[in-house]
Image (cartoon, rainbow, N blue to C red; front, side):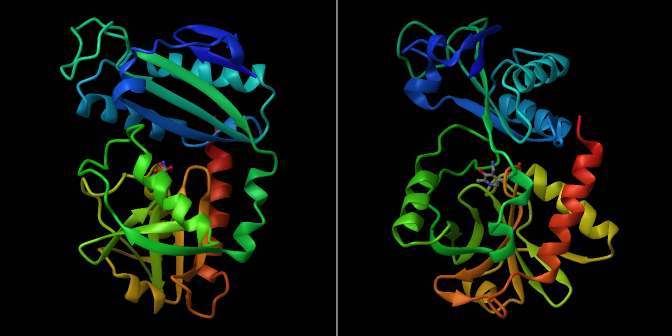
Length: 284
Ligand code: PMP
């Protein structure tokens, strides 16, 4: 595989970053994941807007222009012959030469890394037909989950617990209310109403969430942005999650209790279809 690091395209085993990079020492970095279908990028513009917001919130310089990011994404897709899959993009604060809690002096060059992951048939994931089972765990992450940092240890622990318990993922719960999934935004459906937590520093502002809520509104579905409990979710008609790589993924079981009739719901199925149709049309 050919990867990108700080302006160079290199075979993956020749691409290196410093052991002093603050991304490595302090998780001082942000990232984005953009899905690729038919060799084109889904919602690229949305992801770049969020990347710049994440960088600004951490007072980190933005090392590349929007066009440069797009060019690297396209070159990696081409060089690696990606039809379906993703492009991962990471910007860390770089290498100040010594370990120090304080940020390095202005002008320290951020480290930019991008690589592809191939995933043939990504849009035809059979799991979308059967749905995910999930568990709930306490949300013990830090308080700025709106910034897409590479500090992913707690979500990894939650995923491992889900795995150990034989399910697909975990929803995180704080003060009795669901915040989001380990790597996705969480929704329930009651009657014709789609319910999802409102945006705040408590959750990542999902790019897929924004698109799906826009499509739901355009399709005259009702949307309520508010928090909900696991109990309410278990008693809902449907549940689902959204993310750039899972798109719209139905959830059919929560902590061992079936959601609705335990089958993939009509609303989640329709939203997935609309999302994939619209995103393919607008892909760059
Ligand atoms: N929440 C969290 C915690 C995530 O990690 C992700 C995926 N990066 C999402 C939500 C979904 O965001 P997006 O739709 O932009 O992929």
